[in-house]
Image 1 (cartoon, rainbow, N blue to C red):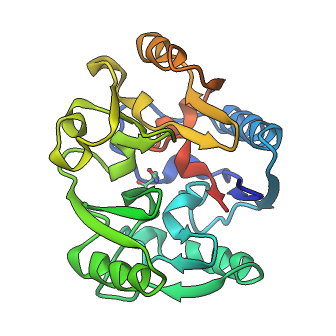
Image 2: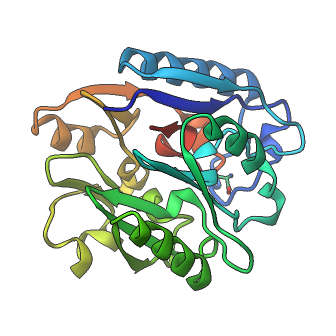
Length: 252
Ligand code: CIR
């Protein structure tokens, strides 16, 4: 069970962050409302929030997931692949220090949390433009020290591994066609999202609830058939900046 979630509010310059989404410019007021709603939903799932203020130096700061990987025992502070985002992790490190032993990814290794998919005691590490082999190797060594296994997965066409594949418990994963047919994931029950609904692949399991992004009716139907307690959330303004449900929190 997750007890806590770290979240960080969008700042006024949120729309100046990195994006290749082609969905238009986000509206700041709407982004704030959607973020507030996301926070309320997390509280409904039973987690206590650590809400951090926006940092004007970092328009992408609400996407906290990328800055740390947290397990029951330790937290790994990442070295972000996006240069404009380096420094976001400092406040996160300060916050996590109270709760967990801290480990670090160091240059020339780069890792972003969006590339790290944990399934039980195994970590899939996406090799993307934001996570390199050196970073993956450092991460894998840290994980092994604590008894976790890991393996790499090539990410070619999307920002992060979890942009396109997420684990939702009970041996189920939600994935786009790019990952649904990969050998690495054959042992799971794969819910493949409709081609036009690729953003649905980023779902978030929080304790007894499954959070799904609003607006993807075909994929929603498939998930509903599995009997989850579903909470549907509108995060359009964050999708415009290339982010999804997992990106907006660090759960531990
Ligand atoms: C970026 O490009 O870094 C941000 N605009 C979006 C990051 C989304 N994070 C995630 O998928 N974990």
